[in-house]
Length: 318
Image 1: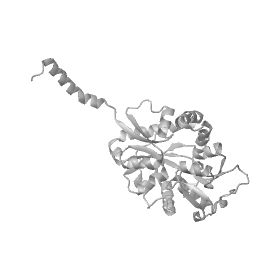
Image 2 (image 1 turned 60 degrees about the vertical axis):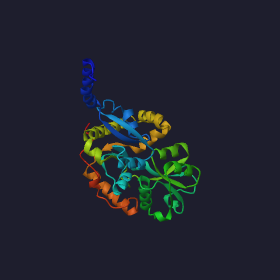
Image 3 (image 1 turned 30 degrees about the vertical axis):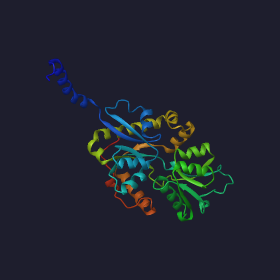
Image 4 (image 1 turned 45 degrees about the vertical axis):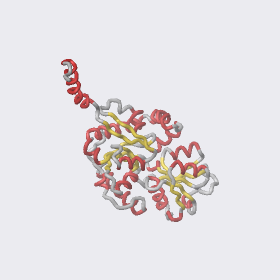
């Protein structure tokens, strides 16, 4: 059956328009987000208001499932601690780091119960001998716990380490089932301000204390302009946050349901900022990775230079 001329012309026009509509659809960058992480930073700072692409957010409770999603090409990009990234990279995952963010090593700490100067059973690091300490295996707190102990002349074998994720560790610590907890911000500030904990020691000067933006190899091949733009916005977001900590804390508190004073303290301790992923940082990472391999945190020795792509400048010059 022949179509009427008008109907045929309309159908032909629709077919011709279809490619144009497809071309007009903005590209998509799939970003994995940990609670209170990249999404909060970009939203609150306002640096993502004029995107020429669409961000498709996926939420993850911790670094490990986010890294698994990167490995499976379920997301293009995500942020996690340096040692979490290098541990998964060492397993052969097709991922690379393209940008970095530094926090102060004091953001990684060992907390115990009781006020400073009190008469509790743990007053110094030496008192941890024979005690049960909660920590998450394979990341920042694993490494920082061992580094803090060794720096104090304590053999980690003298401490009973209980491997737990933060949610389980928090319950165990508050119930007295473990004597100490090796943890990071904002969990440290939450324990100190809300649950009567105190910082026994921290990892200032003992760890790179960096987070990395990591991508999978397919995104690195196919979405370089989007990745470059995201890295610049990430740096701009941290520059804004450093000058607006109370506002950043108030806005993020609404998203992740933590008290504002907890986040204000955590952000002051973190002192987070974007930094160049350059040769100096690569050397620092290599030293830490070699030590983490020696400690058993990372399964095998890796060449850090092969795990990073330094062609994405963060635009820190302003």
